[in-house]
Image (cartoon, rainbow, N blue to C red; front, side, top):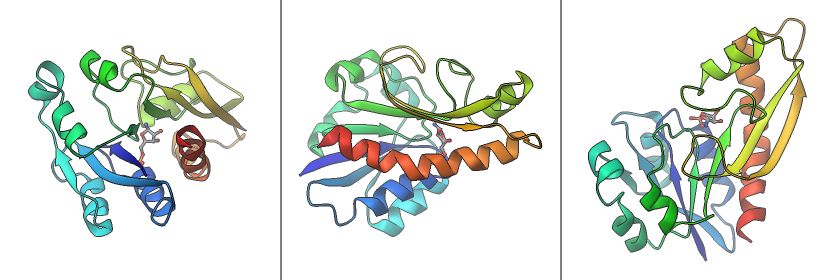
Length: 187
Ligand code: GRF
């Protein structure tokens, strides 16, 4: 059985989708949710699903041991970032070399990098007059939104598109594809 930890600090709709998808999976299971924000929606989602939550502290994560001992104690094999905004420290990248995946709500390298998260991304896409957007799932390295792409898919920007409508359509794409990409990556 491969064990997944989901790192998330937002509402957790992707976390919920992934947890549900792998609930009865023969070789994959989500065994830990790691969160940096007390009160984040993802915490109650994990609790309802019976997945333990590890609430982390910035100083220890960034400049301490990056919680590697807890991840190892929980036998975490692969880390999935689903709305986790802190940069991943080099220590953790080295401990999980090529085993950390992130999902980004644009067609990287466009609209990626520091500060490019949530609605900022969709506002930037609309402001740029892009004709398409999409999602990118990539390996995490020491730079923001930089590692090897393992999956991209795109949608056209509609004439009436707003950042809000785009955010919603991109979320649908994420829910449709992310679990399958994780499954292919892990098996
Ligand atoms: C997603 O749009 C993902 O691309 C980004 O953070 C968002 C998380 O959304 N990295 P949710 O909390 O899973 O709804």
